[in-house]
Amino acid sequence: MSIKHKLVSIVIVNYNGKEDTLNFLRSLEKTDYPNFEIIVVDNASADDSVEAIRKRFPHVRVIRNKLNLGYSGGLNSGIAHSRGKYIVGLVNDIIAFQKEWLTEVVKVAESDEKIGMVASIWVRREDRERLQQRVHLMLGRVSEKMLELLGSEFFGFGMIERGEKPGDLPDVLDIRWGNGLIKRDVLRKVGVFDGKMFMNYEANDLGYRMRKAGYRVVLATRSRLQHAGLASIKRQSHYFADYHFYRGKIRFVLKNYDLPTKAFALSVELPYFMLLMVKHALSGRPESSRAIRDAIVWNIANWRDYMPVARRRHAS
Image (cartoon, rainbow, N blue to C red):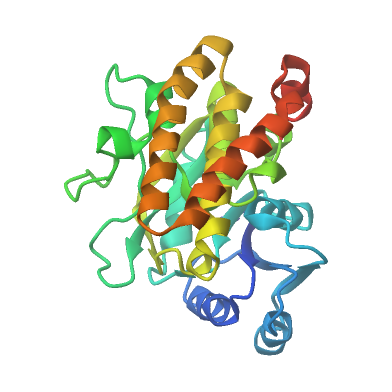
């Protein structure tokens, strides 16, 4: 009796990253899962990415956005054009060196109907044994909100150690850059990625909404992907990268938490941001100081999104 493998839609977002995307697509040819489609969403690249992808990989569906919608908007475009029961969103600077990586995440997804998202572990290009995916384990009584609000730069933990048992399914708080298999049925209930988060905290936000709705976000410890280490972000200016990071981080807090938690978070984070602005200014990076300032201003200008009625309307 043959096993019916559910269709998986792999969505890759590209922006002026032709070589990275082509390398990723070549690596996917080794994937042993028998039923998947590939969708590349191009965010108005200025290079010849689209032409090169279509020429070398004619079976890959290419969606060409007229504007750069960011990583979250690109993922949403791909989701809208996908057909799979499961959707895997990934940045383009990935190498699928492990042939069973997708089989493993599907296996985990199907092990529990309450699982909404499954992440692979990322390893660095230089050392595939060094775990790079920064995921925050739910540790005992440590507050989930504290971890999400302040992040590992405050608490100093988050890495999955080598001793992790292969059969464990750790619940995680932090899924970076949409790195995960998502169940379409769950998306219908909680909404897609928040397009206003552009390129940071979009997956954190989606995972938070999933957990709030009663679903789990877990790590498939037997699934590995190789990450080039922010290659797509490194092509951008310091201002661009910092601005969207802090814009997304502040939006995550203001959008998702109740008033007391927001007040606590901002009382800690705003002074920290001020210190960072001074540090960047003194160290010759005034563009990073401006980025943090502009991220704060942007969130103030979008205050209506954080009102109770607006939060329900802008959940996705």
